[in-house]
Amino acid sequence: MSRLAQTAGLTDDQRDILKTVREFVDKEIIPVATELEHRDEYPQAIVDGLKELGLFGLMIPEEYGGLGESLLTYALCVEEIARGWMSVSGIINTHFIVAYMLKQHGTQEQKDHFLPRMALGEVRGAFSMSEPGLGSDVSAITSKAVKDGDEYVLNGQKMWLTNGGTSTLVAVLVRSDEGHPEGTAPHKSMTTFLVEKEAGFGEVRPGLTIPGKIDKMGYKGVDTTELIMDGLRIPADRVLGGQTGRGFYQMMDGVEVGRVNVAARGCGVAQRAFELGVSYAQQRHTFGKAIAEHQAIQFKLAEMATKVEAAHAMMVNAARKKDSGERNDLEAGMAKYLASEYCKEVVEDAFRIHGGYGFSKEYEIERLYREAPMLLIGEGTAEIQKMIIGRRLLEEYKLQG
Image (cartoon, rainbow, N blue to C red; front, top):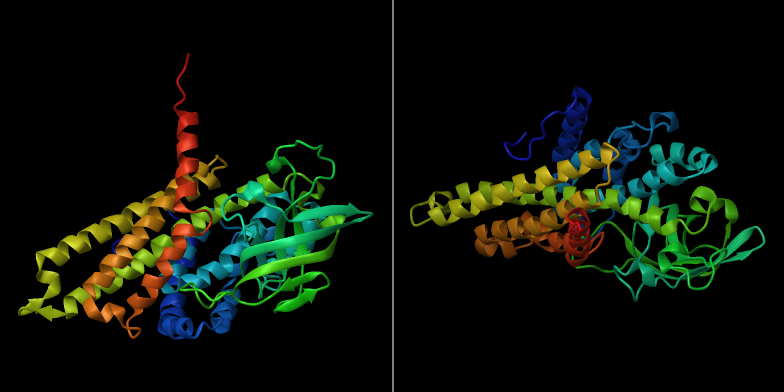
């Protein structure tokens, strides 16, 4: 283990899990990540390995066949996986958000039906809020569900669906005016539907099409897609929690977990960038000595290491707060904002340390340089995080009298 980003107070089980994951990352992910990323190839062998380790059931309760671990354990595992290749952490993140939403908000039948197979990785989860015209403005959702007997008919187009092709269960947020009078606040007339589908692209069930992978600058390997609903019929028992109008709150609860995950990804990518930078600085020589001996490079390394430490500490604090049952939207927003911004800065400094070689696809830092920007926009942009943080601070520090 490195000197940086240590976590105090872990149990023996947590340490064993993290040791196992780190060894898997070092042996099975880092050696192949750049090659797979350049080919934009789905890492099937890595995913199969994570299934064998039980990672898909990490936070699912033991009664459903999972490991029943905490959000902190999960976040620390994500940090390790992102250190190897951030795309792999994205593959398990969406799965966990859906499993978490089922655990917290699902009916007993929904939990019994989905969670045991999700724990084994047989059912793979994805969730869908965003649409082509709205980005982070969830209240502007136009996709709609209309009641028709014992079913709902869903129509609309969703965007930026991670695992859109490989998933077999998608939690989809749509507007549902049924039971909600005109003039109801937008966030009180949204419902989450549990949509089962076949893996793959094209029409994956009647009324549901996954057009294909979106070609991206980075964050390759994992499939990011659109989702088009045209007369998609969903039984009423697949409304998450069995009650319409609760979808916004359910999704925001899941996104709090997701923001801790994105913070953990930022921590992992920053750690790897620091490792690459500090290693290269000791190998590369200029003016008769290793560039690590130049004060300018030592200053960079000092700043990078401090940012790695600070981001890790905030991420751990946000996860522990959620695990304690307390509201953590302020801490999760702060952790996500800081970790993603610091990740970008640490990666750029490592890139600068590499000089011209950082621009070569032969060097791993080139991949990290393209991956880091996704963290600035995933699970809500940095600007959205600052809005959330600002509003929560004004609640906490409201003037009295």
